[in-house]
Image 1 (cartoon, rainbow, N blue to C red):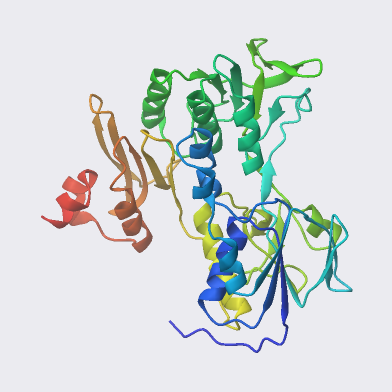
Image 2 (tube, rainbow, N blue to C red):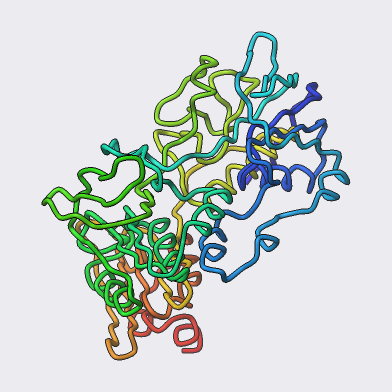
Length: 411
């Protein structure tokens, strides 16, 4: 592979809108090398960047707020990074090359990065504006949910993806009676097959979580505060608290208002550059080749590519396979590659020990791994994912492949 080529960077002021995980990864990548920028970060939240992956364990009482922080204030001071927090950006003036915040502060830029993240998607239900109805996306959300949670109170979580499961389990650990509503036959429909999904359903019910599967929300009931969720079949689920965790929507409005090219997100090229060459977008707010993002791994790769680009190195982002892992204590689930409708020519290797609660479904095409679902013991997940990425010919390991690295490489 050819060495990256350097380009001359004449600009000096780099302004970053948003201080989430994508923004923090970009900062860390920049300071790890040589860069020419005076950096200012504008954050709407009062806190410095924190690890949103740990919001669910925080809600469950398994970690402390201090454990979410990536770096203390001295780290930013040491690297000459100016933080402007608790006052989000309101407008971008591309002619004047400046950003104006909600409180009227102005920051001039030579290069701008938009890393505004995403928000929980609205379902458009009647009653979504009632008190007690909210999303689950920020530290403030966790604080509010913790204050509202009480032993014996009832909560409904809409959405059976990762975020919905984590929110439901966190509220259950707070002592609430929780019902998870999902339109599919089992949670994590996109990541699991029917067998693994069934095992997950059994585990969740054994923990005391109620599941309303194959169910479609119709409306939220209440006068000023939510009292119940009504399903499409007329069933009412009483609730003092409803969490909507059914997908995310990129925060692209500030870019669209500035006249930047947007689709579902802010459109970028392989250098994470928008339709304005002085403006970049990164993370959950951006759209690359028609794809938007909600997982950490591709966002981190975007940040690393953009850091190289801003440091005078030409680098390009491309989508790669990603692996996902459920982050609920006591439930180990791993999924990667083609798990949904893998197509013709795909073979399956299945291991299922129902008594031990372990299940592995490996999908191969031409003796190369194209997908994997692990439940119960997912320790082999990273090893399998590495071979999926490398396109390894697994012919010699097929009889032992479901048992993982130790059994294969020791043979």
